[in-house]
Image (tube, rainbow, N blue to C red):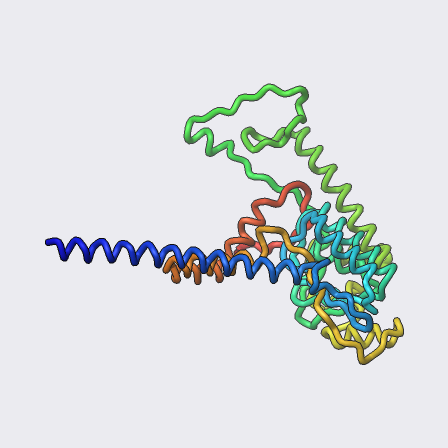
Length: 326
């Protein structure tokens, strides 16, 4: 009996030691990953500082206001990079975030030759971003356009009736906090929202007309909310040329005097905290350390972040999302 007790005590002691060293290993791994990420971030040791190179930046996913990204682009303005290639693969996002990014790229373009390459999608706010450049290159099957604005909100009126819940409120004026989703949208509230959407749409159309040199007839043709393939977009003046990064760099060489033999180096824009890849890696390492390998693999491969991101978009949207898409 005494022997069995000793065995149990030894096993518990070994288990505690294993848990301790797993935690230590996880903490060391997280610290290492965070350190590497900080070094690679804009302004860190991995930032683009070498002269005689072309900076490559990537705009991916949903676009929203991001002061860290603006500051990273400002640092790029003052770097010794010879030119900038902007890769875009985005369905858009908020109008405010898209405008902020557009303005930052316009300021960057005033300091550095800049060209845009549409990877797969530059729709709505993504297209606002693209037209900051004087030259847009897209692949034949890329999708561009979706010139339009929307304001959407859920309405729970019928659901509340079903469950027998009534939301009461006291407000200073009829249009305060309207629409709120808890009552039918009044004609006055709908008219106010319609005015907001039309004003933002007029701004978007005016920007496209000015930047792409379109007449009213062509603008009407492209500004009905549709997306177009790269092949279609060339004839419609939404883009300038079909091709990839090599074609974009060839334009920089021919039109902006950039040296043809310059290397292209990635310049990392600071992502939002919840989107940082190294955080996923750190979480996976921690789960692995505790023997939760299956969950760790799910964390590494999860696609939930973008879905949650969509729910977090507030305000006026310049966003393309085909019906039925995930």
